Amino acid sequence: MKKKLAVLITIMMLIGLVAVPASASEPPITVTLDGATLSFDVPPTIENGRTLVPFRAIFEAMGATVSWDGEQRIASGVKGDISVALPIGSVDATINGEINALDVPAKIVEGRTLVPLRFVSESFGASVEWAGETRTITINSDGTVVPAPAATPVTAADFAKVIVANFAPVNASVNLTGTVAGIVQVGAEATAAIDAGGVASANIKGDAGPLGKSESTAALCPYSELIYGPEAEALNLVSTATLADSVIGVSGNVPASLVEFLNKVNDQVTWTEVTGDVAISIDSAANHVTQITISNGKAKVDTPLGAKDAVFNATFTYTY
Image (cartoon, rainbow, N blue to C red; front, side, top):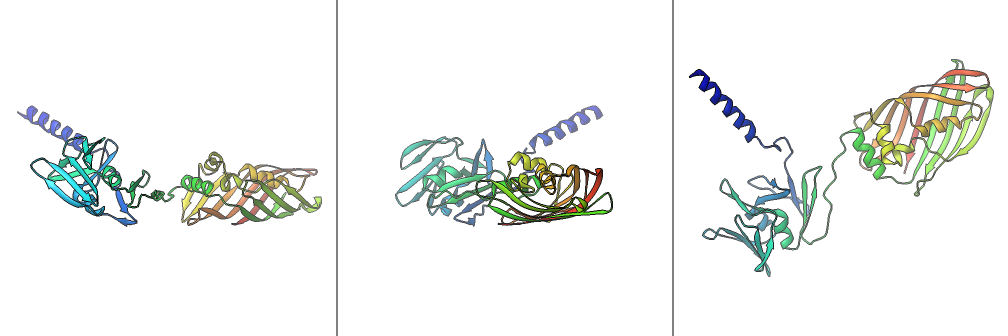
């Protein structure tokens, strides 16, 4: 008896596990019509890639007069000279009497009649857009295609993607101060830019202490990998980053564009093994980098006076 009871309990537990939908942890689907969010007494559901919603709610939202033929089990709506009918369980829906094949038929679930949202909306001349990242359906009744809202960036990688995608011509100002061999003060001031075609340029004024001051130009802009891309380089730059309050934090190696910049400060000095603690501030409304600060910067520098250790801090300010 105990053995039978244990087997029965096990079977019931397995049934319970199977009954839990795979999408139970997914956020709900949001449906908007001309900018207003629609509400449903039964949540929208996805079946075979098609979203089903309560028929009365979607027909009436589209401005159609709704009718239900209980004997024939047909849900229908009329708006102006357009008549749409969906027989329950049939893929043969009609628009003004002409058959249109459905991918998923209308169905009754727990006493509620659900119909394919896209078919109904487009039958009345509306456009429908689906944003999978936000699980948002955007309907525009006049047929104009309006993309559904993009997902809000929630990781450093998300921000890297949208920053590159929203690139705009940018100007940068640079201020760098440091010490070589613990005693020699060095520094640099510069302006840089990336034009609309992605061409970078910089004017650099450097101070290398006993090696003198210098001025140079270069085809570079510090942190262009993140600001302009390509996306793969931006993602690599933030692969170990953290994100807090629209500030990306990166510790460790710095991008090639910064090393190139440092090597233009003085043509007698070569910087290698450059690392630092980097804070990248983002304008989350425009999805642009506004400022980058480096603290605890460290490097090896090769000079005519020999190989030395260097420490530095830097600030990069970007305007669009």
